[in-house]
Length: 447
Image 1 (cartoon, rainbow, N blue to C red):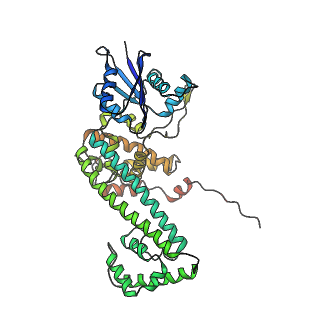
Image 2: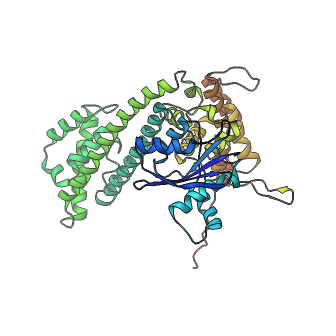
Image 3: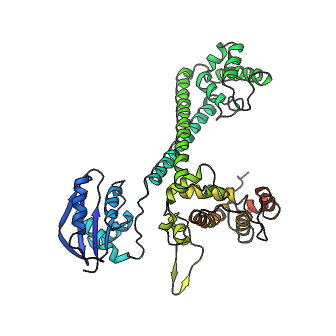
């Protein structure tokens, strides 16, 4: 026996099916088990049974929900190398090996045969520590809440522009506490007109925060503007609109915004505690562009740098890896970035790169050269900056040393000095930015 492989077809709620292979030959009957401690113990014992010392064991599975997690944890506990492969790859191989059969056992056979077809490109799955895994989930939850907040804000803005078009320029800002209070209680113009001016003024004073004054001309002007806007809104719609129902709808969106904002604040506190445990040096935040929100996300998703062989592999993990196209000894450059990798980490790196190129002279030089000299547009240049940013993240997390900004001669510089260098030497002219944008030419209408 040179190698034992195990193909495991996972299910979210049904029975898991596995098949053991020794040197590509099926061994025994298929193994069926559920995600219980007793079943997993019997399954793991069967996998390692009768295997001579030194013979590698490889288990291959698809990432079906989170069903892979306990199976991978138990297998790794006995020294089995666990590989998780994309469903697209399994589907393509199944169509070749088992064209007319789609069963759990057929999938287990395909998964067990997969190492023979692409063994070098199959990397072992990373089972995160409890802290890293919790940080992954919390940052993902925060992202989901943030998307819901953006959706609610768009909905409120759409209602304002449709029902009360005069109200938008009157409100201080659609995200402030004062604006949300006004929308929740005084979106109905009839109520605004019925309410006395001093009552409205007290309401504004009670809900004003930040830079908004609690009294004086600001409050008086806002009360006057709300009254005038209410009159215009009633004149626009008359009795063709049920403002009470609309007020209820807006209040629901505002309450959702408040709840989501509170949940995000609690998530950030918990994430920060976990981040301090897994990355006590906080070296990540010394890199320009990586701040309070992005650092826990990166620390949770990347986890340990030891799982990556080099910078090239971590770039591929992050999805910042161009496709390769070569034939006849000629390689075609300029291929698109692959769609692999986590969407959350790619989004985080894109945002971080856009900030970092405004601070770090090295990254600003890359962005400037691609925009000015090579004719790339903004997104292409930012992706190139993000690729270099990943290299810095890898090195910083691996060594635990803080990143140091350096000038043209390699000397250490401050953030203020770095911004000045970027502003003086690597500012992309506005005419070049306009030239890089794609414009649709509209033909003049015939006279």
